[in-house]
Image (cartoon, rainbow, N blue to C red; front, side):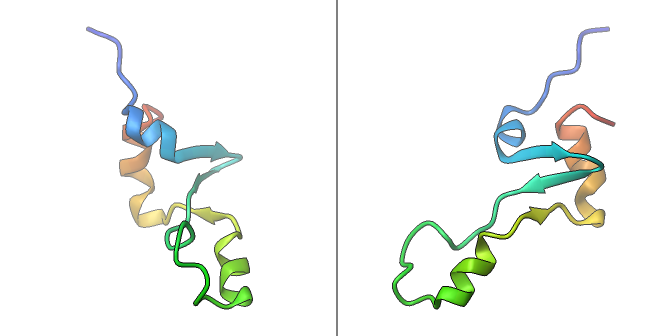
Length: 64
């Protein structure tokens, strides 16, 4: 049986941290002038993959 291949797009977007999978946050790359400082600070906080999506992301990362 051939080796499992990691989905390269998923490998670039998700990082494993302890038991959680860390993900990026949307809406923080451009048009930042109209967003409040509080909103931008909230976008910088770490985000983690939801439990509902965890199994599918693990399959993409060959962790399942």
